[in-house]
Image (cartoon, rainbow over all chains, first blue to last red; front, side, top):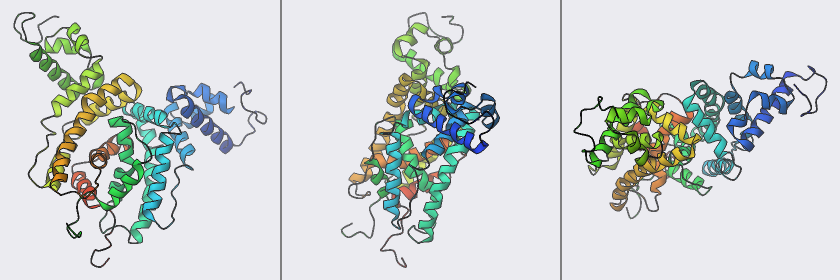
Length: 205
Length: 205
């Protein structure tokens, strides 16, 4: 603990919630700016004016800290709105998600995190529990509202919608590894909501 | 070159195509049985009765060899049929894909390969060029047939269909990291083809 990196009140005085917030902020910033390998307990403790012991106590590994920091740091950017127009709201949220990964530069650190999660079961669990599943639950909440309003068809599978909207973006980034931009968002939403098949009842079909 | 692991004719006698096939077979088998870390040039040269120099000449890295071996080894299992019924054909292919990842045990090595691809740009390129993009092209071929037959709606985005079918499976495996089984396949196909939205013209809607 050098303490010269972040101004703070006397040693041991900061409430735990405040320390936790500083640590998550520092970890999220280092992750986005320098990538996953830069997120070490040493570095983050120094940047947050905390102690390495505290970090060891709160997180099983630097990867788990990075996953939680990314969740906390992206929460506002990836917020779900309810304007009453499901297609518009999904398009807005997915556009924000694509921008975060592309223009805001989160694509590389997020790919590194998910990549490392495939090779390290403990980080895999941390990524899943601290980021991916909580984010899916936020998407489900917005989709349940739409279902309860009768905007979705009977028997719709909300988890499949999540796979076909956000999962589709991850597919381009992680599996195909091709460039993509926010023009993808409305196409994903349109096809997820209205399907790719020609409708039997369509005029002229 | 010890030569005692695989029976072969005299040194230097095998045609290149035959050596290449043996190497891909050995790499695919070791990848599926033991995972990506076991796929080394040393090990695969020994198993295939080839020389390490040959492997160095043909593949930039063991990861690139593993990606091509997985493509070659999964080609038959992941073949696209054309029975004239798009939904049935997509469901059959996706069911085979899910089975390959789950009951056939390819999930772990494929996750490792894609994971390592996020951390190693050269492997990333090899995975994308030797597996992911060629497989997408095979899917596009089947989808183009359906589009040309008028089974898909005007302006449909075939790449988005690929993202919303196969990408959705990868999403569960890599990002959410939750168990899944072949019951996912028909749900993905149904929602990708017919959409999640309630249809305005639907009786009772």
